[in-house]
Amino acid sequence: MAVSLTACGSAEDGDGRPGDSAKGDEIKVGLLLPENQTARYEKFDKPLIEKEVAKFTRGKGKVIYANAKQDAATQSSQVDTMITNKVDVLIIDAVDSKAIAGAVKRAKDAGIPVVAYDRLAEGPIDAYTSFDNEDVGRIQGKALLEALGDKARDGQIVMMNGSVTDPNAKQFKSGAHSVLDGKVSIGREYDTIEWKPENANANMAAALTALGKGRIVGVYSANDGMAGGIITALKAAGVTNLPPVTGQDAELAGVQRVVAGDQHMTVYKRYAPEAAAAAEMAVALAKGERIDDIINQKVDSPTTKGVPAVLVPGIALTRDNVKSTVVDDGVYTVAEICTDRYRAACEEIGLKL
Image 1 (spheres, rainbow, N blue to C red):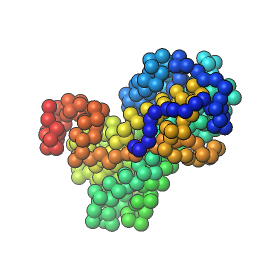
Image 2 (tube, rainbow, N blue to C red):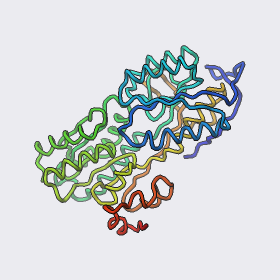
Image 3 (cartoon, one colour):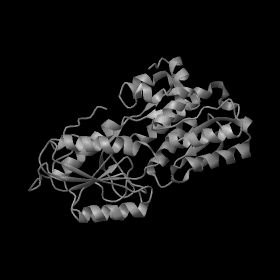
Image 4 (tube, helix red, strand yellow):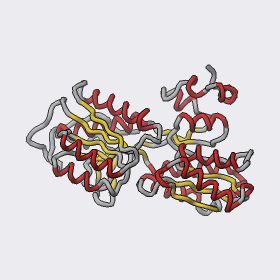
């Protein structure tokens, strides 16, 4: 990612002009994450943001954390609690990008800047960091087409998109369609409630009943959790030669399925630069400093135009590059991936304890 992650410049007010005062390093950063169904939030995002806030405040900044557990009303209440606790800045990964808008405005009215993290929240946010979500969908679509090869026209694919309450899901879906439309026949397509694997499992079972297991040549799954539910449904239906299934997030279980050959690919997203950008922008905003030199573009939400943003590219992870991605980056050790169940498959691709 060709973007500086060093905050610089002087304090500024809301219209970009230098402000009258700036805070020191002893700031309070409110961190609100959306759910704990997906492993990444507790395992990666939270500790990475805490580490980066400490770095940018020389160990003096404090992160106050709350997880909404997929409940938009709970998250709105958590914002109010953060306002009461007088945090200096908020980092919010919204459960529901529309529903959070009122809470974002309440924070802004209280003089608290808001960084939208991973999902583009509505309302008067000050900055945003995530991955290039349409490109993630394109990466998934291209990987599925490559896996299908000449079989792309032999049957139908099933598309398992994410939750309609998540704006990222819409972008993943758009990116995937831009690659797949006209090149495959889409037999069934679902928007999966709350991204839950059990809902993806039920949707896949319905698709198998409607289309017939012999007619499904591939499955677009927007993330790894749903891919797990999809693969379970395929196996329960007696599908022994699994069609290629995509994923996203490089969760440990997803990586293990890729190693085993059950899941074709996942999108590996380097959470460290995303977390670093969020923390750096949050600290700078809390101190009243400029963020011009941190961002790499501007984006529009349905309510706010020209939001300063840092977008990070994703990487297609397959059996061919497990080591050069999640292992070499220190996300997982070979021992974590290559448990007894996966040891033989690991040896096939050169992962040895």
